[in-house]
Image 1 (cartoon, helix red, strand yellow):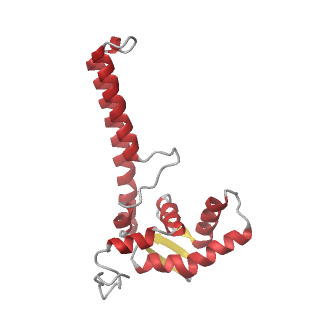
Image 2 (cartoon, rainbow, N blue to C red; image 1 turned 90 degrees about the horizontal axis):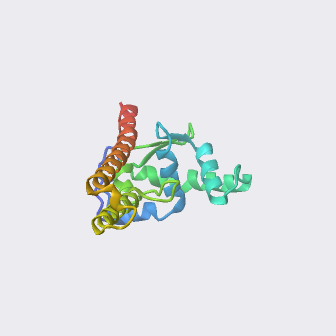
Length: 187
């Protein structure tokens, strides 16, 4: 932990994570993949074996991954990465039950690790592209570009606003669903 981090005595976790702590956590691929895999679970929980197999599969591109790679990932998770994530309160790790569970503090690092979805675009890139496409299409309508001018400015703007509204609704719903489910799991 960095020198400037305050620690709560009862939980032994920092009250506010320092940027250097967040960087230290996220600079390792296996810690990022651990967080990503747990986020993809409806309840934010996985067994260490299941988690190590998922990470080994991503690292090797093989399904199932070779057993030596699974073992290597399992040992590094158990000895290094899960204790580090637990130290900062990002996960809780029951080493007896071999279960890992996301904690609320994961939101502090999520801001810094926008995971690119399987389609290869982050939400920020998607919204930027949609806004750019809408702007260029509107300009094309105003300039009278053949084929596009028939749409009219009103129809063009309405279509892009509806797409934007539906996309942002889905984005908010997907985020809220995960966050609400984590809150119910805690109670």
